[in-house]
Image (cartoon, rainbow, N blue to C red; front, top):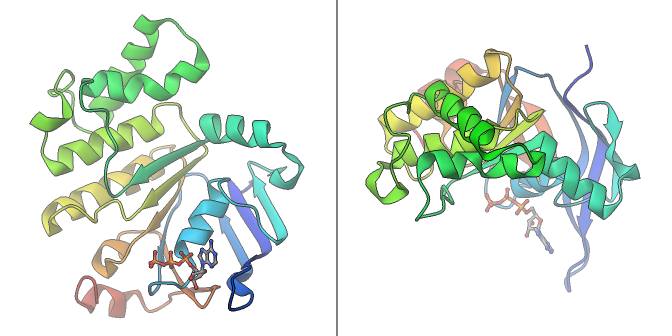
Length: 238
Ligand SMILES: Nc1ncnc2c1ncn2[C@@H]1O[C@H](COP(=O)(O)OP(=O)(O)OP(=O)(O)O)[C@@H](O)[C@H]1O
């Protein structure tokens, strides 16, 4: 089976006044469709650079990034934007919902790229909100939703166009422990239920434990965390 995403020997070096900074060094990563991978690591280790690279927001200095088997180095800027809109979903810590729009209207937004009729876009958005357990809040505006509900709307919006890859940057950072667990379990269910490859960057080690694999970035290098038991036993944010 073709991996949804593959990084081969990816390096990303930033130029800074103090000299070059190797934010990613020889990173190899393969994530299959339906798999959820958590990325942990201390501040400044390279997690954002890795997410930005996977999200086609940044380019490797060297190495290869294949998305759905396609070498992304060959894409023009316009093609990268198109691929990002069609094949990648993003979830952020701060939800980023549009305040005056209902949950359905927020979730339907990414479907504008597909140019289908509004009625059809809203039907798909309603179906996706049912998938994240919000079938009873279809017409709510964000200020009337709890933090966990807002993040579930944001997740629905990120998967409504059936992306190949779902990137989540601290998706539970604004949620309490219980809701964090619910949201992470939901991301795992979505992945396992014929969903996208899911990559979750998190500081929360307890949350990371719900992923199929946990990888740690340290000084730009990626390594597998094999002692999952130790991970689960460490305090959150530790
Ligand atoms: N635009 C930039 N120019 C120069 N150096 C950069 C730039 N962006 C990031 N870096 C450096 O690259 C390294 C990796 O940064 P990155 O933001 O990927 O880390 P991170 O793990 O996401 O950190 P945090 O958890 O604090 O968000 C750091 O040393 C950072 O200072």
